[in-house]
Amino acid sequence: MSNWIDIAALDDIPPRGARVVKTAAGCVAIFRTHDDEVFALDDRCPHKGGALSEGLVHGHAVTCPLHGLVISLEDGRARGPDEGRVATHAVKVEGGRILLDAARLRRRAAA
Image (cartoon, rainbow, N blue to C red; front, top):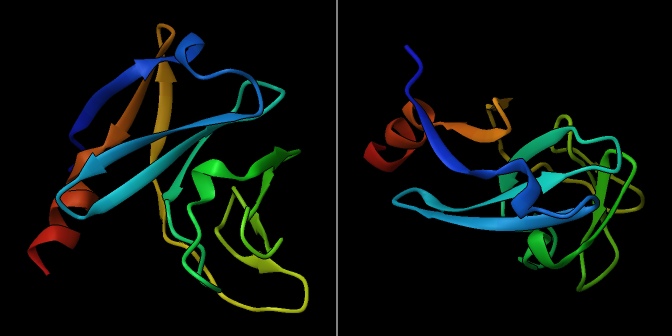
């Protein structure tokens, strides 16, 4: 069962930008790509823990600002010499508003 929570207006995040949502399960980075797609990932690089929300968004990927690890926004997998994966979160846009699935966040916080 999904429980969507309103995060922000799509226009609150610039193209190729990000915002952070603080939750009981940790910080989630919300990314907007150049083509107005929206993705949500844990805001922590699997390599050195850098804040992905401060990274460079390009295509459907983000580059960690600490060591340049490239993370897919679509599946959270690292590309390049280092491996790792970042948890992804269900997110959608309806009526110009960004909605995040809170059900998964609650399950993670309870674990």
